[in-house]
Image (cartoon, rainbow, N blue to C red):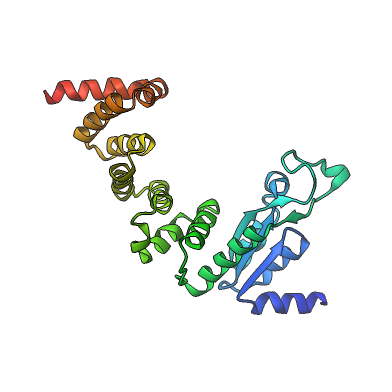
Length: 239
């Protein structure tokens, strides 16, 4: 395509998926309704993160980055840019399916995901992209799928927590703990109850953690010594 044809395609596109590269500069000509999904790697994340943000800002398009594996034997260390330049990304079939599900949801709102594993994959993908509001929206629309599915409920709880919706996060973690008795969920309720000022729950939950999960209680006290002092002072005040 000629430069003018590339500009026209970008301007008229509803959704564009591109690997990190110079073609993303055409975002400057996208419409405000265009959605751009860039597939990058840990290399582009660390070295070229800001390359195309100005172009997205100029057009006002919706710009999302996802991180894939690098197409090289050593996928964890950072390549030498001087000798290897930008290393191409590599996607597994599962990763491709996750991206397809993400686009399907992004284009058609709440897609009808009939299988829970596909729904989990979509929500994990959205969560890893930092799209916490979309995780909540998807799972609010699929409320029945939360029952009996701790993985989805935990994503729902964590998304609310990162959005600052502490009451909703507290309730979700409380539901998780009541159903599955995972001490990590109980710990989350303690932190959230403290934020919400629910002093009674903090005291009751810490006592339960100490009684039923002493190693977890010790770890909590070690990492948050101020919590024990705070709870003790509150308990004394209440009594």
